[in-house]
Image (cartoon, rainbow, N blue to C red; front, side, top):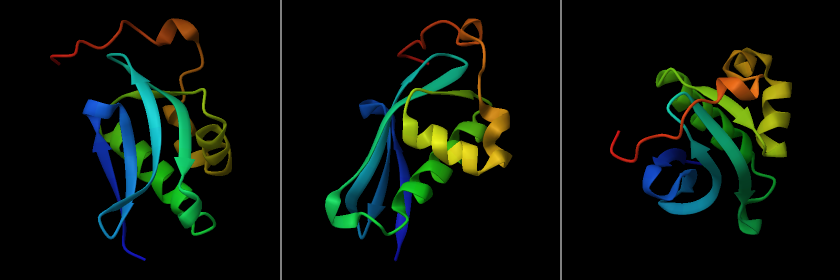
Length: 106
């Protein structure tokens, strides 16, 4: 399966695409320092194909490359990080670490 993770900042989400079709997404809110994942969903048609993990890894790799942290309100992303401790360093533990809302022009 040819799955690609794409950042779609105008929709505040990362998408996993298969053959150009959006198969799922991870929604977030952002500040200057932190990406707060709020919801992840995979289309029923693509359930059970490992796309959630591909999406989580791609999104978290993108965030790491930006030097940002992660806050997980989404149970799927939280569970994925729990199973992949090599991503635990991205987690923001203190609410004070969240920072100011991100400037839309940034």
